[in-house]
Image 1 (cartoon, rainbow, N blue to C red):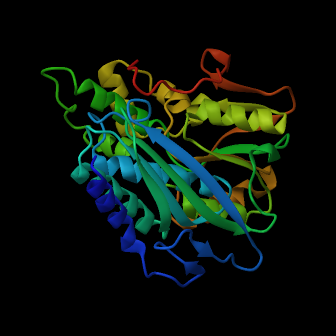
Image 2 (image 1 turned 180 degrees about the vertical axis):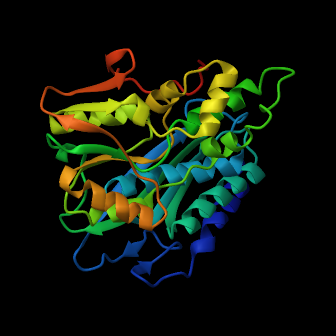
Length: 336
């Protein structure tokens, strides 16, 4: 890209200029942004990168979806701590085969996700790369002082829960990859799966309910698959986690598509990832009240297992008996 094209890219972030206020003291247009943290709150900071051919393919994600998903991934990390997002910084490395128009569309997706969750983009950087597009998003959020929910807080006897259905993103990716085969189209009747992969939602509202629960234990967002996230909780907390296969929340649409293509939807749940639901633990005495609070807000909540004493491990009860779950996550570009 030529220098004048990079000037154009920088202009896209200026749409946030002049929006100081509500804690933002200095926004885009200076060397750095300046913001204040509300009294009694702490900063939650996270950063994720998306790299072309590693984290996304142009055949399965359009430019707007790439930007949208990069923002959602970080907002979800803030939610996993029980916080809410406030500000974002964007860095993009652009290779020669990406046009100015395509990059502008990436920013359209970034702003779409940011606006949806009340996030203000306050800065970033633009550079050239020789081969693949690199997109890095940093999100800064807030959480009540001393209240951040951590992976290391699971305790023996707590129940394991998830905040929504799982496996949909992996099913959508499978369908999109399958459609690349010459002569194949998106599977008829399953077009909705595409949105589950390209346009996931971050569970900020759910996170704010969790942080108000006195019996909340650990929490993680499902970005790399349920098995991987539970392993992180088990290792950080020094416990064993047991879940039940027949309690896993799977959309009927996902199950139907899996049947059509001869796949096991449970594999997508365990190793698919990018559903961005929250998985965590809660004291049994508080579980019913927490579930009621979720239902009152129209949010899904499902108990799927229990934390037990033992070395770090994740187990699943199936019809064939108890099964140890591997720590691995899903290989996003290899169809099963």
